[in-house]
Amino acid sequence: MLSPAPSTEKIGLTEKVGYGLGDTAINLFWQFCNIFLLYYYTDVFGLSAATVGTMYLVGNLWDAVNDPMMGAIADRTNVRAGKYRPYILWFAIPYGLSGYALFANPELGGMGKVIFAYATFLLFKTTLTAIAVPYGAMMGVITNDAEDRVALSTYRFLGAFGGGFVVSLMVRPLVKLFGGDDEVLGFQYTMATFGVVSVSMLLITYFTTKERLQPLLEKVDLKTDLALLVKNRPWLVMCAAAVCTLAAVAVRGAVTVHFFKYYVGGADEVIFALGHPESALYLPFDRVTVFMASGMLAFIVGVAMTGVVSRGLGKRNGLIAMTLLNAAAMLAFFFIPRQAYALMLAVNVLGNVFAGPAPALVWALYTDVADYGEYTFGRRATGLVLSAAMFAQKVGLTIGGTASGWMLGMFGFVPNAVQGEETILGIRVMFALVPGALAMANGLVLFLYPLDQATTERMQAELDAQRAR
Image (cartoon, rainbow, N blue to C red):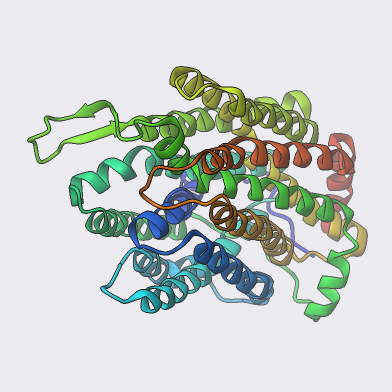
């Protein structure tokens, strides 16, 4: 049970921006890994695609343990700074260091590289969980105002995909700037730069936010919490949708660079540049960078439209509509000729505008799911609800990430070589048909979500009345 925040207290702009910067920090690393880690491991670090796929599987199985565990620990934390917010401070620096370690690339032999990759990958995922689970749960205790929750969710994902935009736009130019033809050095310095920025943003999040809803202490064990969670139908539907969503994201993101490098061709062709080639600040923006950055910018535009979509269609129906439209855009890529780069840009922009409102709507719905648990079972475990939801997302990432490596290997992929027709077809299927089909399945699953706008408003009104007693 949560005590209500004062009804007159609204969340200010500083706190909204500060909260949003937390997801910028998370996504500077998460999107970096989602887009570039498979490419880095195969084409730079020298691991086989199948080895990387197996490593993703092991790493995400570890998440099966540490995600719910972190949520349960956070729910039971009680210090002066709050329940969830202190973890942002405690793990900011370890998070930054572990992200850098992924790309440290020491001089090791074949098995040494595999061991180093496993160790740093598992360390990074542990510190990511220690930051991301409490961060996600914070939204449920900063305010119980429905409009402020949507606003916080919107700022959060503006921040998240702002981080994604920086990654899409700047990683390849910065790798070139810092390393020249030495991608190892370029990735090291780029990730070090992102690490300093990420830690700074997390500290801003900590010092600008406040937990207002204080839980009443209840002696309920984890087994009881989990038993109630699996009875929560809205949570089950959202988790099934999350698996589809993140599997699609993982597969498409993992092979984006491969798609342009080996199928479209001219991946390194410079579209525009800042500075002269002989200048120390020369930043070349190539085909891959322009494609990813324009898509992420369109995504941010979509995120900014979240309020319009939510008010016009409701959170549930708006999420379904945007998801299905984005799925259609991804499927269309299989039929676009390789030479039609401008058409690819246009379809990618359109699909990302459709996809933009989805993350903010999803996390706003999860706070409704936590309300549903309190309303139906008399027990609110926000941290466990959100951490278990994040576990479902990571199941999707496990499926997508593992399948990406294994499928590339199955299609006969050989790094830095001319690919055969079967491999090219496989990369196209992985970039368009697989994520498109998963996104379509996501949209259809969401039709089973039972909390429409009217039901949610009635439930929240009754909860407010109960909390005021």
